[in-house]
Length: 45
Picture (cartoon, rainbow, N blue to C red):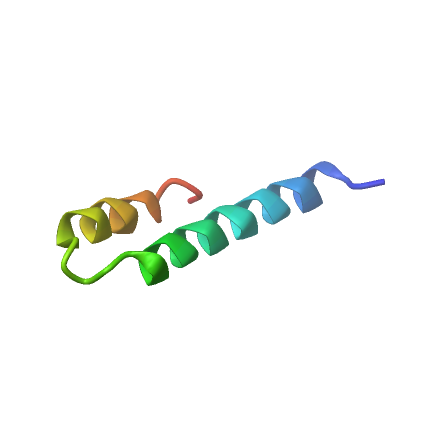
């Protein structure tokens, strides 16, 4: 049904979306979480 490239792309999109949601939900006073989430953006790449 899905080929390997489509599955990889879907996983990357899901990871980036989840990280973006975490960044959006985290309060600005919790700056240490923002720096960790920012570093996690490199994981899908």
